[in-house]
Image (cartoon, rainbow over all chains, first blue to last red):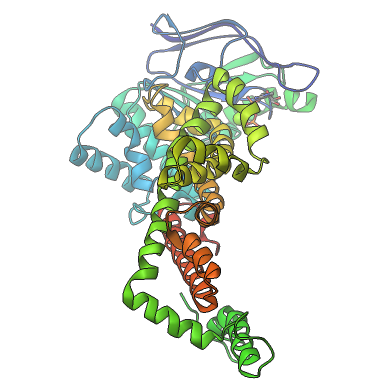
Length: 250
Length: 262
Ligand SMILES: Nc1ncnc2c1ncn2[C@@H]1O[C@H](COP(=O)(O)OP(=O)(O)OP(=O)(O)O)[C@@H](O)[C@H]1O
Ligand SMILES: [Mg+2]
């Protein structure tokens, strides 16, 4: 059954410039329940915009987005998002940030503290519970953002280059954690990345978006051969070949 | 927080207090050496002696308390009203249409011009003075709040909405905390004028307070007493601002800029 449907989705930014920017034009995409889909595309092609539309933060200029058959009209905790630029609350500590969503859902103090601590430990930030975000490095902030969204345990995870600021080892550990959470809790994941290997390793399907205005260029099945290094490289190469055509156009 | 003075560098406390101490010493010396008429400028030592007497009788303390009370009452009222109006102006189109022109006209206007009207309306007691202070302080507070609230990073609002915060609660959960640094800046700018205006209104209309105390002393040609008033105002102003700075730094522990000295 389809969990998320984009039907003829279009987004035009009017902005201050005389010429409106067509960020996304006519995107059609269907995501199954519990599917892990990666999205790759040139910079500025509208990947973040696509997630913001599904998150309900921006109004559509055309088309429709449905979740569980219902049109998206406003933001909601069923679609948890990890923002590309973290968007942590600077006035809250690491713990305060990670607890925020749970507190908003009315969970008691002891319970949410315990859950938050679990995710803080998962992203290896034990000891930084009482630190404010402006005292953390970019990679640490990104991990807080990840923990904060995961703690809310949303049905759908929207991740906008969530490992972009991390070093190779941390990235690897968190990729495994994410796969573990995904397989255990069964979530539908939309994962934007610049890294085609990451797309192959994590996702079951990779959506390649064209240069702006963004459209779906191709969808590539990446569900098999995860344990096989050579197969991964081959798939990555395949995605890269498609992507290259678009990178040249920008 | 005083870092140990490095060799060859001037200690911090010296840098900090050297100029006021020099001015005070010059004051004392110029009177002692007979360079100025002690009636026009009594020696610092005799002013301090006089201040000690006045404090012992409780007279000057009573007036200082009146001044602090009026300044704080007016300032707090301005804070409550100013923050409310600033938030409304930033969040509501109709409020913006209503308040924006008023603020642009009112901000640069010399508000003390209203004092005569306020005396007419509220009498010569506390009320007219407090209203005068409120009117003076409210403009920088409104404009700082408006600025802060209209510049909130939209991703912070989206984050909160994404984690289940309703549209209405966003004001309390995101907009106000995010604009707190600007709001506190506005308060800090407004704060000294609360004291200034209180003293001026006390000079204009009777009812005691440090302003009245000094004007009365001047009328009776008690020059030392006039200077006692000045010294007490300086001390009160410095103390209040210091407390304010501490409160601000405490509230803004998370904020990078507030770590700078103010
Ligand atoms: N608020 C806005 N006003 C005007 N134009 C915008 C706005 N937000 C995005 N755009 C434009 O829409 C296009 C898509 O932006 P978006 O952030 O979705 O790209 P992206 O694919 O996420 O890029 P990147 O990989 O660099 O993060 C860009 O050309 C950008 O200039
Ligand atoms: Mg982006």
